[in-house]
Structure formats: C-alpha cells, structure tokens
Length: 317
Image (cartoon, rainbow, N blue to C red; front, side, top):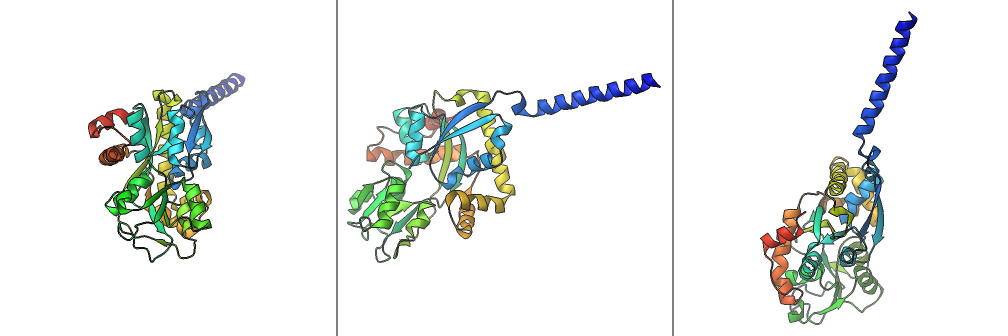
C-alpha cells in the first residue's frame, strides 16, 4: 500500500513539473531576455495600437520594454531614427518619402493606422472660401515638407504659393497656439486632438473636403535593434494582438482614444470610426508615397523619382 502511495505521489510530482515546464515554454517572455526599445512618436490617434499594447501589458508577453520619446511633430519623431537616437518611430508617408531620398535605409516594420479623413483645413472665418482664389493672401499654418503641405496643395488643386497663400511653417502645437490665441493666422492644417481645439476659436469652421487617404506606420533605421529578424517578429506579434483587441473591444477603444487624445466621448467615437487600425497595409503606404514623388520633386524636396518598384525594395523589411 505504501509503495502504491509513493508511486502515486511520484507520478503527480512529475506531472506538475511537466505542466509547469510546458507553460513556461508557451510563454515567450519566460525564456527570452527582456529588451528595451526606444520609440519616437507624437500625440496622435495613429498611436492607438501602441497605447493598447501598453495598457493591456502585451509588451510584457514578448519580454519587451518600451521607452518613449514624444516630439511636437511626426517629422521630428522620424528624424530620431535618421539620427539613430531612437529604435523606431511613427511615420507618415510624405516625410518618409523625402527621408528615403536623402538616406535610403529606413525600413517599414508594420503599419499602425489608415484613414481617409486624418487631416483637415480649419479657417478662421466662414466668409473665406476654401478655394485657390478665395484664400489669396491668407496665412495658413502647417509643417513644411510634411503631408500637411501635400494635403493643402492637393486640396486646392494648385501649389499654395501660386494661389498667393502665405504658408507659415509651424509645428502642430505652435500652429494651434497661434491660431487660437491671436489673429496672426487665417487657418491651419490640423488633425485630432488639435482639430477640435482649433474649432473652439470663435468663428472658426471646418472646410469641407473629399477623402484623402493616408497610411501611418512604424519605421526603423539601420542601427536599430529591429534589424534583428526575430525581434521584429516579436514587435509585430504584439501589434497584431493589439489590432485584434481594437476590433473586439470598440467601447474600450473609444475610451482609450478619449483619454489619450483628451477628447469628449462622442468625438472619440467619431474618431474611432474614421480610422482602420491594422498592421499589414505596407503596400498601400508605398503606393501613396509613389503618388507624391512628382509633387516632392517639383517642390525641390527630392532630385528624382524612384517609382513604385524601387520604393517597395527600399522600405521592405
């Protein structure tokens, strides 16, 4: 009887050891050394997947620690990977295109968001017609060399300078401060949360616009930890889980947008519906970059046109 009992206890002990061992094997963070990665970003709804990953402790599951650097504009965030002061950065298509022509070694890790209504033109008075002729001699704030500038030219179907518009080169934060706090500007190109704050100015109105497709992504440079294939896979896995979480939790997503962007709940819900938060739209982003190349060349930002195939090769993982 004693031998049977001893044998039973022995079998149970072995089963527990095997169970614990298999659980450890199933948890990537249990056998992968924790790594810290530096993220450069700006305040924008495009960061939602990153915020979900942090709030839901998804980074911990892949033994990754995130150290954030927050910049006033997406272009400045991207400059952090150009200068190797950050491992990865949130990027928009226009600044990435211009950067690739100067230093063609930045790679896309994955996309973060896409929207047809990210940017908008806000004018100080509804008496201003949002046309090339109607905006002559108006002072419009935007960040030069970014998608904001491309958006304005695209909106007008003309180069803003040819319309007699005075483009005032300001970061989004400085543009908002100047627009709301005085009469120095007649308008600005903005996105949330700056957009809602700009519209709080008495008399300000949102100019109607057609859909303007944009894709936003995470990019990394040649000296980043993300040049390691296995590490890239871990980061993509986290953001893939975050994308699934957003799809399954619309109410919680709205709440996270409201808190992170400091917006009312109804505005956050409208914002949630304007974006698609997926990680696999690299091809759409490359096509958008190729569409802007001739514009960037005419502006003098680049010297020649790569074309779709070359851009695809340059930014591909």
